[in-house]
Image (cartoon, rainbow, N blue to C red; front, side):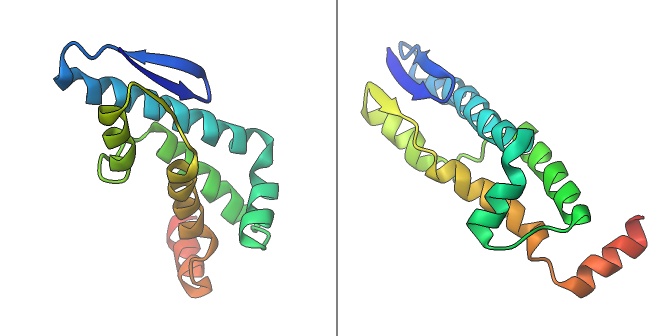
Length: 129
């Protein structure tokens, strides 16, 4: 039995069948990422952007960032991005999920909109309004 400490508490992974461990872990990772994204979306996104990127998002950017984070929250777990966690679970019986990999993915999602060149943003608005 493997144990993973997450933002939602302690989760158990049945390891009698090694091929099922990655499937169970993906579910745990997705749930953990969802909790982190929801925390930002439910009141801390503007402060996080100001603190992390030393800039304020325009209203349209903020809405797009929220939509992109919602998409990320509902997307699958990329095994390449989360490979260090998969490896750690294979090697140890107990791990605590660190948020660095999750926030790196969240930050990339925010940067895609926040630092999009102004000309490109204006073109997008023309086509998608």
